[in-house]
Length: 169
Image (tube, rainbow, N blue to C red; front, side, top):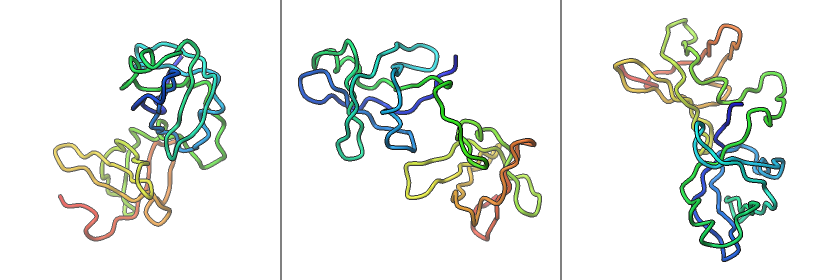
């Protein structure tokens, strides 16, 4: 079963084994709906039961089954936090997971192929689509309706509005 990265352990909290997680999930309460997580990489990871979730500012504080002291928590620092793909929730029509959009062809509203969607940055005030172009600098496109005109999942094509200065060849 595939795993999806949803955060990274950045520190420990206190003496009882809690870990501080920088969350990549768009929904702040994503961790509350998970009974288990995986720590490590997509290829090699270890399962942990989530016993408690709380928040401190933008950070998620997790208590994991079997991690009972600061030393055990310290050993987890730097590990990626993953979830089972099967635990993803059904999205409304027209809304997509980033993982499903990566690799799609990106074309301008005039039909010019710009490149391939490399990533969508969500750690900014608004989403930013990163379009890879072979042998050229990436293009960064604001992920708002004014610029993202259409997402055709059947043909794997994203159509975007190109304005002057958006990119240079």
